Structures are given as C-alpha cells and as structure tokens.
Length: 453
Image 1 (cartoon, rainbow, N blue to C red):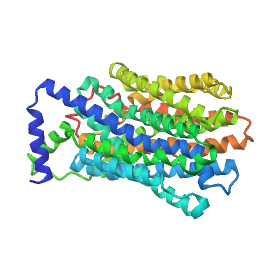
Image 2 (tube, helix red, strand yellow):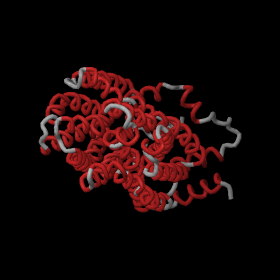
Image 3 (cartoon, rainbow, N blue to C red):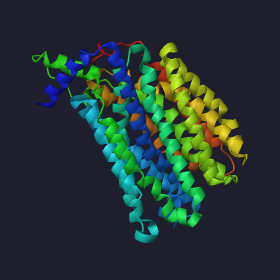
Image 4 (cartoon, helix red, strand yellow):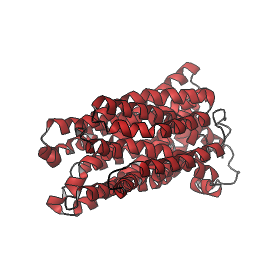
C-alpha cells in the first residue's frame, strides 16, 4: 500500500471516532508535542548556556575572554542560520507526506547531533578543528529544530477545536522553557559539583551525552500518535479531484505571495531576541557583577519552569481576546521592564536575580504563548508546514541568531560600562515586531479546514 493510500485510510478511521475519542487523541498529540519539543529544545538551548560559560574556554582559549565569548556566540548563531533551511526541507515533505514522519526524523537528527557535540575534542587536543566540527554539528541541530517546531505546532493545532487552537499549539512553545530549564539545571548541577577544571575538561559533556537517552524516549512517544486530520482531509479531497491542476510546490506557493512570510518573520523577531537575551547575555552579565555561575543558572532554570504556566495561560487568553492584542501587550511590558531587569541582574543577590528572570520570562510568555498559533494560522493547509516553519525559523534567525554577538559587541563598545546600547537595540527590534503584528490579520476565528491556500 502506498503512503498516500495509507494516509487516506487513516483519515477514514479518524472520521469514525466519537467526539470524546477525538478529544482524547488531541490530548495525546498535545502531550507528544510538548514532550518532543522539550527534548529538542533541551538539546538546542543547552548549547546556548554552554556557549556562554564553557565553549569560550574549551574551543577558543587562544583568545582573550571577551573575544572568546563573541567567537563562541558565533558558533551559536550557526544553528540559527540553519533553521530556515530545516524549515524549508522538512516543511516541503511535511506538506507532501505528512507531519508525523518529519517529526520523527527531525528528532533523530537532533538527538544524534547533540550526543556527538559531547564528544568533540577541545582546541587543546585538535586545535581549530574542534570549533569547525562544533559548527557543523550546531548546523545539524539547527536543521532539526527547523523541522521540529512546525510539525509539532501543526499537529497540536490541527488536532484541536477552533476555540482552543492557541492553547493547544502553545504546548509546543512551552517545550522551549521546559527544555531550557532541564538543560540549564543539569549543566548547572555539574558546574556546582565539580571543580572548575574538571567541569571544563569533561563535566560539561555529560548533559550532551544524555541527549541519547532523551532521543530514545522521544522516538517512542512520537511513534504512537496519529497524523493530522486536517492534513489527511486535504489529501483525501485532492485524491477525489484527479483532474484538478497539480498544485505548485509548497515553497513556491509561499514565495509567490510572500506577505504572510515576511510579516510573521518580523512579528516574531523581537520575542526571540528577548528570549536569547535571557539565556545568554544576561547570564554572563550577572556573573560579571560577582554572582556565582551555577547560582545564576539555577535561577534561570527555576524561572523557566514557572514560565511554562504563563506560556499556556496567555495562549489561552489569546483564544478569547485574539493573538494580536495579547502579543502587543507583551512587547510593550517587556521593553518597559528592561531598565529594572538590568539593575536587578547587577545586584549580586540571588533572590533579585531570580525575581528578574521570573518577571522577564512571564512577560516574554505574553508574546511567546500565542506565537505558535499566530504564525501557523497565517498559512493555508497545502503549504502550512512550509510557511509556518519558515516564518518561525526566519524570525529566530533575525531575532536570535546574531543577537548574542550583537549584544556582546554593543556592550563591549562601551568598555563594559553601560547596557544602554543593548536596550536601544532591543527597543528598535520591538518596534519593528509591533508594526508587523498590526499589519497581520487576526486569525483566532479562521476556519483552517476551508483555508487551504
């Protein structure tokens, strides 16, 4: 039996389910999206913490500390450069063959790449080749995440009822702080338990090697869910109309009318810049003022766990009030909090640093919670995986890919005495995102089953 025939047969089975059975399957898919996304972002964001605290010493020890940090952030950016490519590749096949297959493949690539990062020798052993291999594996991570997010978000979105799409899709984004918290907690534990020399020699590698265990868990979870019913319905309809002109490739459908892609990219950019500010620059900034490295990591990890509930809550609010007003409110509130945030990070007081992370991540959740549904709903079913993946990943590239390097360079330009240039950059990006959000349509009431193109 061909893949297409199997998909149509699956569609008929799903259509025979009772409403209660459909809700049960929806909950399973949401849980799968959350767990899978958590595992993928554990791998991806673990690298963010390591790029701030480990890689400058292990792979760039021939540079002075600030230059080493900037070089390390450059390898971090490589993953973001690869994410749109992953979105385009996985999106194409996800729109043609189905969401589920691409989710399993993306997780496999991510798990293997992350495990191998834990085995790369440092510059003391193989010189600059360590950094070269690191960049290659980081790009594999980026390609995998580029394919992961779109599939996970769409599976949750397309399995849910119309008035719960924001809530359902938000569990994919909730996986990001979960993965960040898990990765940061494990890395912080080894940093606290081991002498600094041993941690930099081998201790940092253990969290990356644990990725293989998470990979096995994730593959089991992903293999047990059903394909998206909206995708299957669209495929069945297409087979029943054989004389209809063949559709263009999904990426050509997106690029032929690029407005939605451009606006979603710009709309999401600021949220990712603020996210990476918290996971990279602010960690180094707090330690510069005397805070203990592992204590800062624990503060961020604990605040990330708390933020999970805010992500889901504000997505639920967007199901009632709309995606746009909620996200705009989050942008304004976060930017307004920036001066107080940096003052609290300078305090060398763990409770104030923890409070700063908690408030900042709660405000970020106002933007991040509705984002998965906001981006996905801008595209039709025939090219939704491609459009949503590319929109989201281009937003991460623009907003987060080079942000650690830019922020570190802006801060260095003042001699490490002022964060004003850093705040001005983030404010400018927030204005761009706010304008782009205002130019998009409100999508919370859109019927996705009839929105095919």
